[in-house]
Length: 263
Image (cartoon, rainbow, N blue to C red; front, side, top):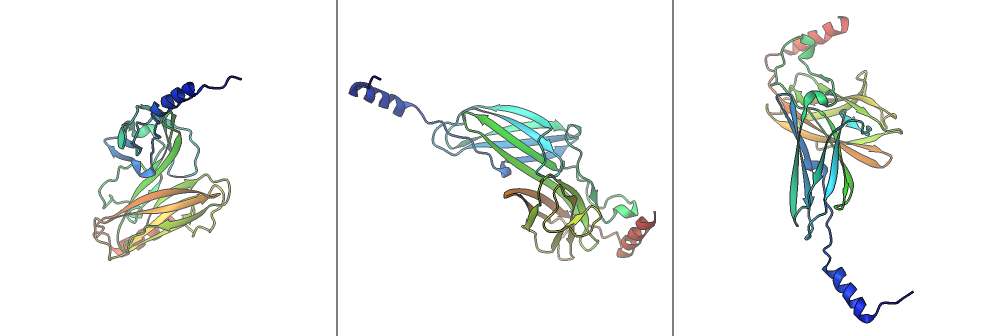
């Protein structure tokens, strides 16, 4: 085998030093957000380059899932090629997806439902669900999940709840963090009994939320349920808004709940 001459060695060294290092792109869960308007869900994804050299190109795919955690990627809703990003900069991707092309939103329940009345809160058209972003290319490879739902609650008038599903093959533990003063959060089974700890494999149930009289109308509290499946933690964020249900009397709520038991 031939050895390099000293001149060839220095020439190779110069070439290697002159070759720019390609930076990796970074996406965090908080870099993925979405809103809903007129039946269209508008996704925004921000790719970061925190380094001092340009990033390499990557291709990404976005998958949608039901509201929950540890669910399979079966519904691709969009794909995009990300060009090189300048040093210490970012690149935003926007995807507009019709609401009916996404998994159906989870079932919700509110104090006014048993009365068969119009909602007292403004209409909430947010798509509650999960998205998984997967990317690969010269700018590195990665995967990040975003799990976001919204719910409306009436201070002092009982609990609201939202349905949630999980796909962990083993027992599932969880912690609840970031609950604001005046709010109470509980996981319950499908029959609304208190959920066990740990949760059983493939558990599904509801997140129940109460707000007491100290919570001002219009307050939004975003808390996180951190599901742990075999050491992998998935944060599910639920943003709850307190709205004015003053026209409902507690007697009406109680009577409506009694009627619902015998209907």
